[in-house]
Length: 298
Image (cartoon, rainbow, N blue to C red; front, side, top):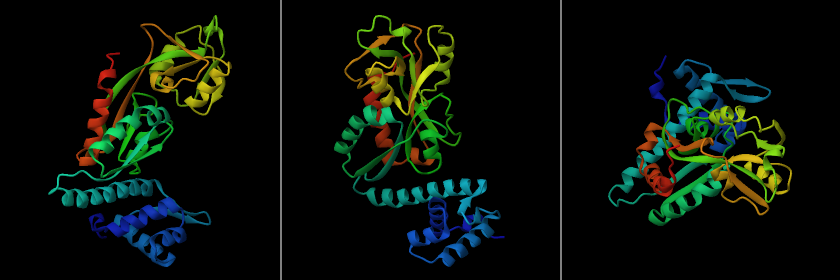
């Protein structure tokens, strides 16, 4: 059996294409080759690795658990190969350039990243940043990084979406939760609770459980923006973190929950290898500069 270190970049591209397209034929179109060529390549890769990477059937091609792990590594290796070439060429000029893929949950994408990316673009116009909004449920933004689909993720740290052990990162800010309710309501705590799936910090849930005035959610929304819209329409009150409340709509009012209010830690995650790249380092510098005045001790 050949060693897996013999895998060539083109073989890694085949693995990624098959996994993302879900079929050998579609992967062949994407790669500009034939279905038989893709099939032959996958069989050769499986012989080298020593495990079956794809289940074949009428449904197409689906990664096995080993295949899913291999594809994630393949994406990350291909990204580092791109970075290696780009940074080697950029060294004489000192310019920082190239693509930078960011995954962020909705409120971070709307309210945290825009000024950061504006400053990043002004300092390093050669950086081509793209942002993908990812729900912080299941693998969340950290999962996008671990799977090789993003270079850096803005994530809720210490929540029900654990950071994969193969990633590195740090806390950027600790934001308080507050009560948002229809403006002028005489007793907002008596209103029904509007909630959404991503609002799931374990510490917040513990705090909620100790508050006998908070009812079970009677209205559930898709995301924090829909929650605010419903609260603004008078359908209830909500308990939300500060980023989500940055652009609270007219007709709402925000009330502090007191010194024992819960907080949410927001930070970034990336891979150890990408943490050393010029583009990611530049983004982290801008993130830290942006949130430094807001960091709270708890």
